[in-house]
Image (cartoon, rainbow, N blue to C red; front, top):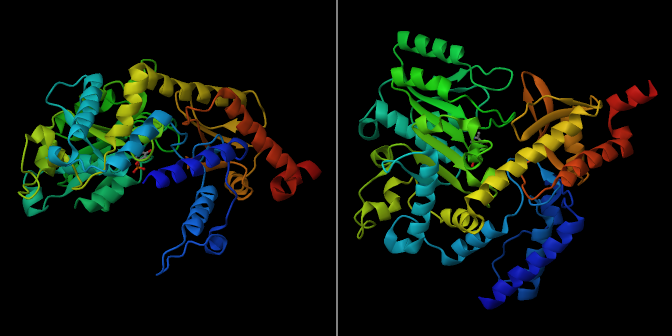
Length: 464
Ligand SMILES: *Cc1c(COP(=O)(O)O)cnc(C)c1O
């Protein structure tokens, strides 16, 4: 084991060194992957020397998500205190279903969940759990909503026609989950969003009324804190009354930006979070822990037990339910995702988590200011968001993002809103500083300048 750990730290030190000068790994077309790297598996073992060589090649060829060249998704960076926790979790290799199997680690998970509930402002009836990702925590919310409306669904299945409501710009896991839990994709109602990407109450009212007339049972409203493209926040308080009136479960999908909870300055963006039935967020997005670290919190934990507990005499043999976390989880065997959040939180304090959030909004302000002061750019997104949506010199965002990727220059993605396509730049890596943000734009501009021939529309503009 000692030798293996040494190898790990050698390879990783070398990668860290390489990342200093090379923020994007060399592009390998997917069609060339298996010709470029030998990933084959063989009957015979490999010599240690060859094994090390292959591992190195693989590590160096892998997409770099921790550098200031990666803005492609809603995560990035490398938080060392959280990494320590995750490395320890791998080495300790517990499964979080029972106190017997995870011991003190159960206390870690319980402590994180209790503290988050306290910050939300919920009492001791509240609770939560960790799941494998934001799609899964959204799934759990839908199951709890279903089981509250049709209390015997978990035993006899569904015969009622249930409907769920979500924004037309919400995450694609909602229709998937509706399929998984027997509600059906066709019974997802897409509520209109306004130009800021926020859910519209009038549209929701109309849809609910139509469904009631047609004999459907409205079951769940999924709100979003940080929509996937614009990073918009639905106004929670506007929707509580109508949901109370119709006994609709309110879930807040905060996978992307729910972590504003930790910032005094930005938690107003989720004003009313204490009024929802369930709230989920990904600490692996804004908080910056390694993937995955997804929490779901419920105002009344009885719903977690109602939907997820199962007797299993071979598993639950000792200790109280509060220590046997398998009673409230989706999975059976479950990796320890709480520890990396705990090591980070313990080390930097709640104030440190707040700073991580605030940095991202500051970086977003830097990016928006740069764009607003430069007439070659058009801005499509709004303040109070860490998604900055823009176009540069009328260049097709799809072409630009793809060329930047294929030339191993920058990783950034595109999106669209109200039929306009744009680059979506995300300032989620809190290890970046304002200069990294300005460097992004400088790199992009330089790339375009040096590759004018690749952009037909631009060539026309210049020569025409
Ligand atoms: C990322 C995201 C999800 C999905 O989370 P995963 O952990 O990737 O499954 C759900 N909702 C929103 C708004 C997201 O941004």
